Structures are given as C-alpha cells and as structure tokens.
Image (cartoon, rainbow, N blue to C red; front, side):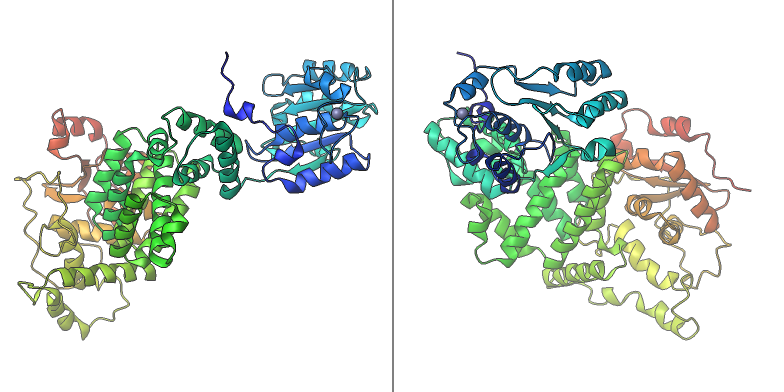
Amino acid sequence: MSHVSLYRKYRPDTFDKIVRQEHVVRILRNQIAQNAVGHAYLFTGPRGTGKTSVARIFARAVNCEHPQNGSPCGVCPTCLALAAGSLDISEIDAASNNGVAEMRELRDKVQYPPVTGRYKVYIVDEVHMLTDSAFNALLKTLEEPPAHVIFILATTEPQKIPATILSRCMRLDFKLIPEEDLEQHLRSILDELGKPYETEAVAAIARAGAGSDRDMLSIAEACIVYGEKLTYASVCAVLGAADFHETKKLVSAMLKGDTAGAIEALERILKEGKAVGVLLKDILQLLHRVTVAKTCKTAEALLALPHDLFEEVRSLAEEADGRAVLRATEILIRTENELRFVSSPRIALETAILRVSYPAGDRDVDALLVRMGQLEAQIKEAPRAAEPSKPAAPEPPKATQAAEVPAEEPDYDFPTEEPVFAEAYFSDGPAEPVPPPKPVAPPKPAAPKAEPSPKAEPVPQASEAPKDAKTAFGLFLRTLRKTSKSGVLFAMCYDLEASLEENTLVLTTASETIYTSLGREEHRKITQEVARLIGLEGVEIRIARPASAEKRDALEQLKKDFGDYPLDIK
Ligand SMILES: [Zn+2]
C-alpha cells in the first residue's frame, strides 16, 4: 500500500473543513448559491493556507448538481465524474509550465465546452512564475473568456502579477492560520487516527507550523511515526528543539552581561549545524516565554510547556531584569528583520548578541538602565568588597578637572571616563562584571600593555598619538563610536584585546567571523580613517587571532594577508 501524506489524506473536500479563511469561503459560497460566479479569481496568501484546496472545492461546487450549503455534494453524477478525474478541472503548475506555448495551448483548449458539468475550471498554481509573454497570452484569454470557463489563479506573490491581469480577477486574500485553529485541526486528525498525544506536543507542532496547515501536517507526520504516543519530547527531537538548554545558556549569559559566555554558547549551537535564522527564532521565543513567565500569573497554562521546562523558564525569568529582557527582544526583532538583507547573517546575530550583553556600548536610556541593574546585582553579589575605594577611583581626576573643563566637550572628558571604560574591558581586574573564561587571552610578552601613561591630563586635540595600547584603543573606540554608520563596526571592535608592538596596534579577537569581517576592505578603510583622526599616523592597525586559535603560524599568515595594507595616510 503506497503511503499517502497526512496533508493529502486530510485535504478538505468541503468548505466546512477549510481551516479559518471564513471570509473567502463565505464569498464563494454566496456566489454559488446566487448562481453568480465570476470568470477569473486570484487567490493570494502565504503557502499552506488552503488556496489550492479551496480552488478545488470551488471547481467541483460550481459543477455540482445539488450543492450542499455551497459545497459539492459528492454523490451526484457530475461530482462522481469529477472525482474520477474528468478533464473539466485542470490544474496547471506555472512553475514548470511558464512559457508562452503553454498559455497559447490553453487559449485553444478553453474553446471546447465542458464534458460533464457546466464549467471548465483552470487552476493555475504559482501564477507569478509565468513569463511576461505567457502573461500576455493568458491575458488574451481573460479578456474574452468563453462563458463556460473559470480561471482560478493562485499565488504567494501577488505583487508580481501584472496590473492588467489583476484588474480582470476577483482577488481573495488567504490569511495565515492562527495557532489555536491549527491545534484544533491537528487534534481532530489525531483523534480520528486514534493516536494518543500530549497537549504540549500538539501545541508545539502547531507553533512550528507558523500559520501554514500544510507545514504543520508535514511536521506532525514526522512526529507521529516517532513513537507510540505523540509526546512533547518526540516533537522536540524531530524539530531539533532538544537544545533548549543550550539556547537557555545563551540567553541567560546574554541577559547577565556575560559576553564571553553568550558568544561561546552561540559558537556551540551553530557548530551543531543550526541555521542562524532558526536560532534567532529560538532565542526570541525563549525571551517571549521569559516575559510571559515574568508578568503573567497564569504563565504555565499560557505557555503549555512540560513542567520541567517551564520551571527552567521561570528560574530564568526570576533572575533576569525585565528591562534587559525587553531590550534584548527589541534588538533581536530588529535583527530578524534585517537578516534577509545582510550578506552574513551570522555576523548580524553575533553583533546583536554583543549589543544585548554589553549595554555599556549603547548610550540610550534603556541600555543605561540595564547597566545600572547589572551593577546593582554586582554590588549585592560582592558583600565583602575588599576595596570599598574601588568605585571611587575615577574621582580624583574629575575633581581636578571640573574646575577648568565644561563637561560638554567630548574630547576633554576622555581621561575621566576612559579608565572605567578601559578597565572594564582590557584588564582582568575586579571591575569585570562576570569573569569570562576568556579562552583567548594569549600572554603577549612583547606587548608592554600594562603601562598606562600615568598622566591624567586632558588630551588636547587629536594631534599627539597615544603612547600605550589601552589609551590608544580606548580613544580609537570612542572616536569610532562617534563616526556615523559605525554601530556594527563598533560592536565588533569593543571586545578586542589591544596591544602595541612597535609601530603596530594589534587588535586580537577569538571570533573568526569578527576577524574576517574586520579584515574586509570597507571596514579597514574606516578603522584607518579613525586611526588617523586620533593621531595614530604611521601606526599600522592589525587584526589578529589569538595564537591558540591558529593552526599555522599566525604571525606569518597575518603578515602575508595584510602586508599590503600599511596604515599610512599622507
Ligand atoms: Zn454533486
């Protein structure tokens, strides 16, 4: 016995069985009841929402001798003939028959009257795939259709249909199917099959269907053969959602400001072969669950998760700051929208995660509030702070300066702010929010970067080059941040390890993607320009990877790769 897919097996054969889309069904039913059907329809909407199914039911209903509430009766001679494969209903897949020849042939064929019923119905699927000349040939037919012909054009991309065609069709828009409706549909099918199931499992499949009945049923099919009972665990296994725990680690680290932990988790997940877009969706879904768990008393029922998973979500919600969750969600939603326009989705996601986990890089109010929350948490976590004078460290220079410098001048506030900035990111000192396991940090014996110039006096203008790596890189970052369109670049740069080697500022990153991206010409141009602005003329900027991450001799390779790019303007 050949296998019939669930979707085909349960393909609706009457309008009553169409999931959602009442607005479309009602119009078609009324037209049949009033004997006022049109000659050309355009069905538009996302895939798997029932366009072809409705077209087929409609095609049979207009021919049926005794339509039942607008649907074909299924028992009259015409219905039986059509079910047996009468030539009166033709389906054309425009994706494979998109030429002018096919459309001309169609034009000739429509002239012949129907064999069994009243109408010949042509269903043209994926009609946007037709070539221009094929559209023209089709238009000729649509302009003067024989009275016995009905065209139903179906497409997921109505914007690609010529206006001349559109204006001759009655357009009906199919909508994505809500999760509840998909769930209900799946439950009814499982009941009919006599398959036992867990409610959470059905909810998870409906969610994965993302508004498409066909997609949901093909996922369900894979899950059903997995075991005797349809369980949430089997659905997770089929959907590859078993790495909930990895995603949770990523989100937890990200919200705590543990950049290294977040990026490591990201690396692990992507290494497992998960696509960037899917991971982003997983992260957003988890953030959404955390929000619900944080705000709703009925969260457990709302989320329909198995109890142990829900407990994990709840613990994450308890430790997370609400503002941080909201800010993370906003940043990642923006990234999701941008994903289809970027050449490297991975860099986009990595940058977004860096931004979330490093609110200090953003100067907007949300970021500052999140940062405050993190600092508060740190203070609470360190009850016996060894040096209570630590947070007061940047004060002395401020005091000496306040008298002479207005706070407005950006170049002047550099020395007061920079120690905080630099300390947090380049030292392994106590100011680091969460001590990241820094797998990178190669001991750089050649770079005497631990010698900050002790002078706390204002840097006058960008004329004199900074003498040590920390200061140089701090100034580099601040200037980079001020130059326009450098948000992404800034986010990629802030976590770099800086060291000075003779006339080269070496910036080290453990991330291969950041390393590759910073080496690209457009990014190099900006970094060179920034270096010039801060007076690093004649100093080469080199992006490096830590020795531990390189299989070959890193230095030799880098010299080979970047030897042609000395930083020398004028
Ligand atoms: Zn009938």
